[in-house]
Length: 234
Image (cartoon, rainbow, N blue to C red; front, top):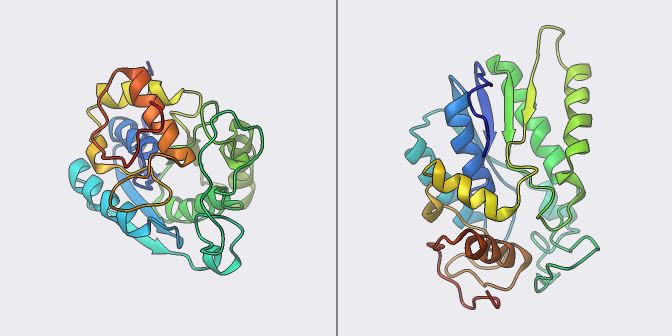
């Protein structure tokens, strides 16, 4: 599905949320990079504890010892997203939506990439990996390929002349079902991932992220190892 033999990096900073897309991205980075640094960011999201648990399990699975859990408070302070603002409800999923859902966290990925760039420059690493998905996602503006092309230009302009960092988005043009199949091929431990926006014990099965995951596993013909309160019609 992907040609993983043509790229080889000195080191990669992997933005690893604990979700299925970032876990598969980490599987790709493991193949392509001589050295890895896993970066996880707690930003006040509702499932912060569960995502952190998944991150630690993935660090152990990939045998990555260089890692960091960083806490950012400003997203929760400013709100503007149902993932961090407890005065907003996480809306039920709608896979046919054309608007941007309330779960969008304003410019979250831009914040994350800025931090990852600082880490990569200090370590003299030449790649940043992020599990953004464009085609089969919730329509977030900071998941578009052109956003990452623009950010790569910003990195070139805003770092030392000798610094050269690629932004690698290996799953950005894949459908979610293709990401599942790639994860199976690369032996990604999906049991150590979490997608639900609302719950930390049993996935709700109704939010956008749960619906996309359920649909993906069904289309891929793979059993999802996670429990759900409802199956979302899939």
